[in-house]
Length: 125
Image (cartoon, rainbow, N blue to C red; front, side, top):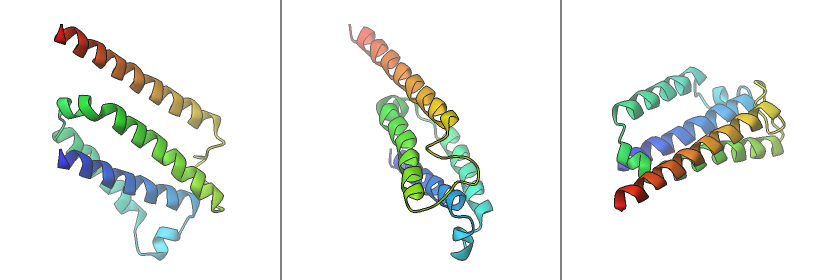
């Protein structure tokens, strides 16, 4: 379970740094962090997550992880915009496409959560 949370924390830090680079280009370079390393880390996280996949942990923490991994980047984008940053890739809170995708991800996650709850309730009977 510690590995699950560690992966989540590293993923959030990685996403935060990628968003900072998008809103303030060159900021990471000034700190000596090559952007390619963040994309490589993202690939490693996906690989490790796939290899250590645990359906029970996903069922237990799926909704919390979904909310954290969807709400947190939106909050970071709002903060970066308030700090005066402007997205070079078009990922901003004013993008209608981003809101549609965000809503769809939350809706599908909620639907899966409800389905799992119903299956758990039927299994308990």
